[in-house]
Image (cartoon, rainbow, N blue to C red; front, top):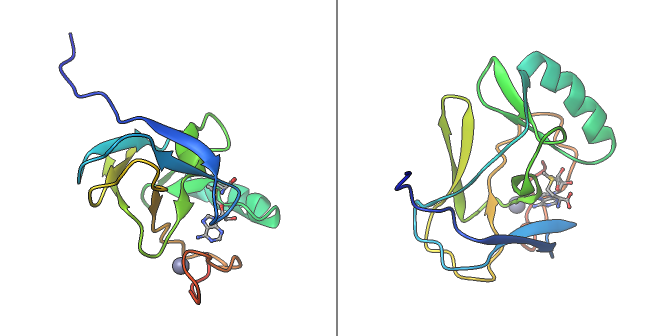
Length: 138
Ligand SMILES: C[S@@+](CC[C@H](N)C(=O)[O-])C[C@H]1O[C@@H](n2cnc3c(N)ncnc32)[C@H](O)[C@@H]1O
Ligand SMILES: [Zn+2]
């Protein structure tokens, strides 16, 4: 029997940042694993091709693990794909082998939206709406 702590409850809801977002449904302590960013494991070369298609529709679904591997949440993704970007997010990313864990970077209260820094380095066509006056582009 696994003694691993269950993952915290989270819910998908409309977000003020963009479309849907993901929110804490219980207090989440600092550094707790929240969810893994699921999606088809593909080469980064393939993800660059898909990213161009997705970006033309205004959405980023691919997540780069390293130079060789990426995940495409548009194929086999879970609710983690709805977590929005913030330049001052409350989550951080841990990569173990090819699993992408989203973890709390501080205590997160129920009802707070989860967010992390996407660290995108592509065409940067999407203006960031994380806070008034943010000049970053995704
Ligand atoms: C992985 S999706 C996140 C879920 C998205 N909100 C939805 O409802 O489909 C990533 C996309 O959400 C939007 N997005 C996420 N964070 C944003 C932000 N801080 N400012 C503006 N758009 C954002 C961008 O269009 C981005 O390509
Ligand atoms: Zn921002």
